[in-house]
Image 1 (cartoon, rainbow, N blue to C red):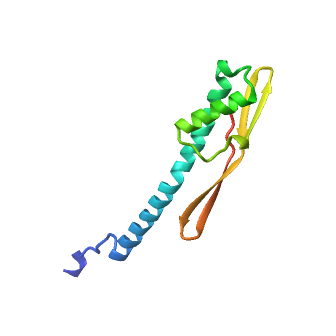
Image 2: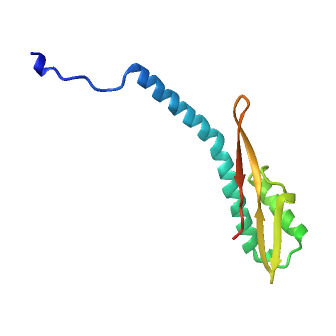
Image 3: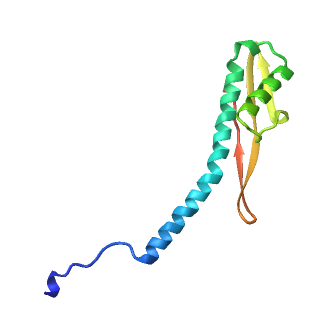
Length: 121
């Protein structure tokens, strides 16, 4: 009779609790980091839109900065200031780029420092 007994397989209660804990930690990291990456993608998209906008081909730096402010305001982007944007214009082609850091507080005094380099290229 003992030879027919099959060993039980599965997850123990301790393994279940540990797996749940890891899942919660990953979810918390995701909820804190994903919005920052979404904003970075939106900033890159704004840069590309401004660079390809025919109405801004001969625009001054002030007009380009105002265009960025308006578009960033619509998307509720506060990570990047206009002063941090590098605007270059050659032969009517506009190139925007930036280099900025975002601090994301995780737990207590633990903070992640994320570096982004969006560009219109």
